Length: 269
Image (cartoon, rainbow, N blue to C red; front, top):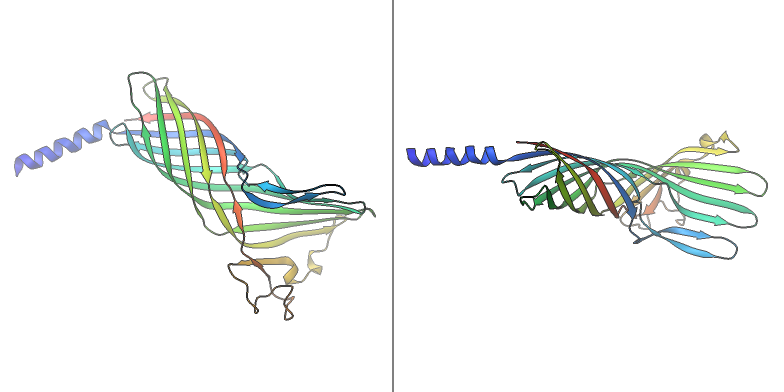
């Protein structure tokens, strides 16, 4: 029994001394992957669908990797995403011009398995793959409209998402500049589609005059439901109540992307 205990203790010490902790910080540039129908753009002569995603922008990544045996281990990464403004609707005619632009700031967390190929050189390839979760968002949808009489209307909606689960995979290379620091470069693919929860109208102006108080609740709030019934508060319902939020059929915000990252790892043993 004593020998077994000493053997386990020795293996534990060896395991601790061979483990590595990698603290990661990086910057990722992403482009949206065309997959979802976001809206339409049209003028007097042309009309086309906006097939894209909300995944384009810049991301600041901060993460941690624990390499149990110097070759693989768990990785956790927080990613703060600054989305590129996305025009989802644009309609131009002889009498009016209107468009809808979506702005996004989001915080994601990914939990993954990190695998690195070790060799005698200072450059080592690695692969990371796992789940992705949306933790927080600040998403606004601005609707602009102008007619040929010079009247300008602006509506700003706050968009709230439900929690979603997606997938993220990265492949890259590490370059050890010292024993305590390594540079990295990687490419990544992210796939996550998040359902809408509701939209709240925070600002409504006509020619810069605040008219939000003139709107009823149904014009100021939209709630998304997986299923609409004859009792749902939709505008097509004969019992539509202007003092309740408007019911909308559930839809999803696609945040799929391809990305390229650069940054560094602080290495601790």
